[in-house]
Length: 390
Image (tube, rainbow, N blue to C red; front, top):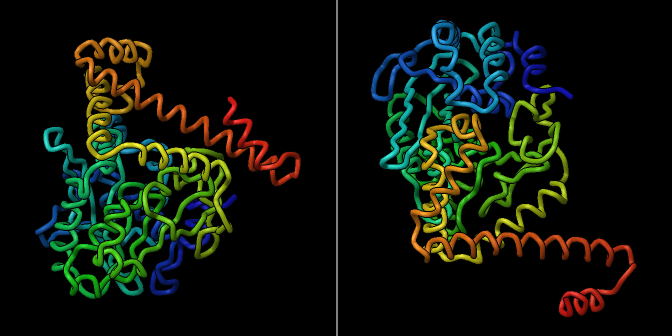
């Protein structure tokens, strides 16, 4: 199966002038947004930029001094390191200029936001790349906050970013990101002013969550909808959350949540390898999660998420690697932290997890029944009656 590394072997010697920007380039740039370019790429509001080759050299030097530098930013750090090596040697990418890098994490305001801009050259329109969720627990907390709030801080910062950076680049441009980064790109494109919207060529949402029905029905979102391209792997979970029904299914290696990793996506010469539909497993998980969320009002969702992350933070872990490094010890600490909650919160947590279990069980039974009905082994009335009696 061909992946982005094969693409770099096939097309890495061709400039954007010879072969224009395509969807695979979008995937690669959205992955490069995960690189910790702190202190290497100039921030927004400045005129400075650095070539991708130069940025890679400086980052490699920083990693040599501190091997842990990549850990905080990516779950697939080894592939990320290999990608940076490959684009550094690629005629297609090495001279692209990077500018306007920002990395903002604040535990108090519950924000994790990062972005950078790949500046235009002949055949290559500028690309505003928004980073997805990093390994920080506060980054994951902010993601979960999407469940009960209209706009998380990172979305508002993404809007400010596109309005600031668009003033410093010429011509039309693309925007995109992976995971939460894709969601941020869509939000920024939807709510920026009309002059900026007209300059946007495409917005790439690479397996990022959609929006609540309330948000998706707003006129600002509808104005930009035709410019959004959403890619999800066939076993997608994240990319199917909320209102995100118009998507292109990408063939991916492995299975389940691991497919969220774009390094596993199959690509062709100038495009992704497409499938007609997602898997039954993906439909099942998505339906169960959405049924569960819809069973709670926003107040219940907020209380549950806050309590859940209070338990996680009780371990004193700041990142997912911290949390998983001594899993048994951290689980014991999380269970011990339950004693700090009042009876109402404990009851709410137990009830919410029980609701999830029941919804998964009922969806599983319904899925099995539908398969038997399709095979003609049993009638719908028989299965409904059996579930009622049980």
